Image (cartoon, rainbow, N blue to C red; front, top):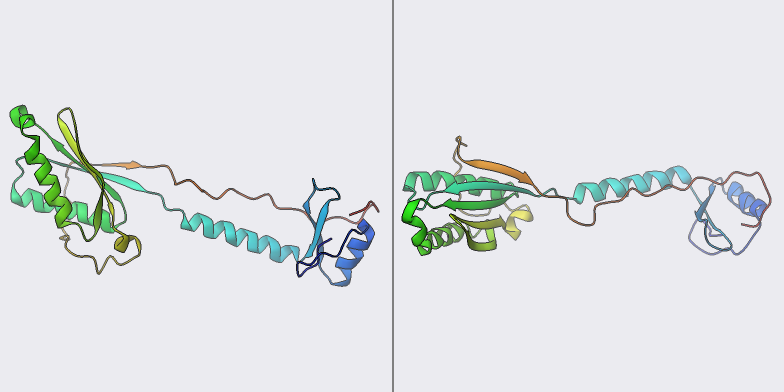
Length: 204
């Protein structure tokens, strides 16, 4: 038997354990049924259930569903289009989303991948205060991609202090959205113990 303040009372009968709890106007809860002898604890069961529910709620709140956005560029993109798309990337990063940058080659553009790499490096540099390169530029057939993730400053909630990024109104650009699975460590629902009923006199 464990007391309400966490101290071990000792091995007692079920009736004695129930009496101990009733004298303190508390509940007797079995917390380790498989132990020999079983372990019971004296506590306020309603308060215990409330605290467990709050812990589960807090754990779920701290889970962050990560979203990957995609913005597509052309190797010979005009400056105005570049600024607009950079604004979209900036907005997504400040919203704590990851952004996949895809550059699509046409014709003989694929023979000059170094130009596309330079474009991606330029974008990463201009957004370096709000985003970090999680995956460096990699070519896959006629596409080259790079993955940006929110910087530590953004994740810490300092978005307003993070630099650059024009607040362009979203236009019907080539954007797509994909959700990642929640990170490992998702809160499992804990099984709640039930108060022991005073029916028999077997040892507790």
